[in-house]
Amino acid sequence: MFSFFKKKYHEPVEQQRQDVQDEPIGHLAAAGLDCDELPNAAGSFGRCADNPIPVNGLLGTYKWLGKLLSPKGNIFYFHRIGSMDSQTAEHPIDAYECVDMTGEFWDVLFIDMYHPRRSNKVPDGFSLKRYDSSTGDLPFAFGVDIFCENFPYDLPDAIEERNGLPAFARRVRAKVSSGDFIRPDSHAAKLKTLAAKIMSIQT
Image 1 (spheres, rainbow, N blue to C red):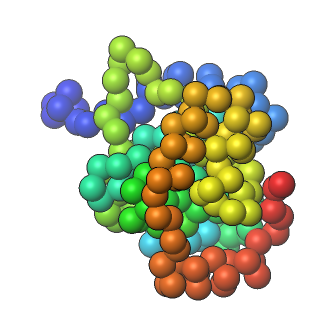
Image 2 (image 1 turned 180 degrees about the vertical axis):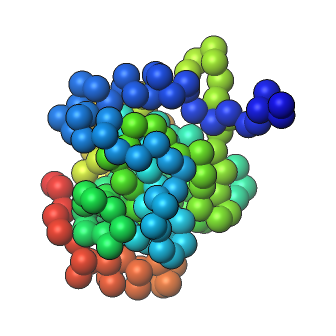
Image 3 (image 1 turned 135 degrees about the vertical axis):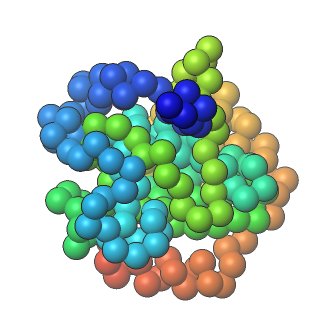
């Protein structure tokens, strides 16, 4: 009886299922689990390959990461580091490095895009923008599904070339050129450890 008051973070499930139909992995995503978290997951949600964030395809990845907010309510820039095996997922997991627009919060999030809908759950400390029925979930974000060697400074060019979004690229370029985006030592160490597990880096 209280479902009316439940927070809504994404488009209706029917729309999410429709989104993934035209993608190459559409048939695999349609056959995936309808869940917020894998039932056999292990480790911290979203922060390890054995407990990835379920989403619906590449478009679902963009939509989910595009709604992600830092502990202070800022949006994130992101790029795909690569993919890796998981002990709990049937298909390879994608690792995305993220930094909020202030350069303060850095993290690596693990995405499993072989599902029919996007998770309503977020890693500890994060939040998601509420769903706005007047605009829907935007099919683009401030990030790319390829590797940026000098992230986030080369992200604007990648957004323009990969996604064809010059206006988004200009906004990111203006922000990163005036900011101070330095990876914390602990985050840099995590990336170094992950490098040995990466199956592929898309360039």
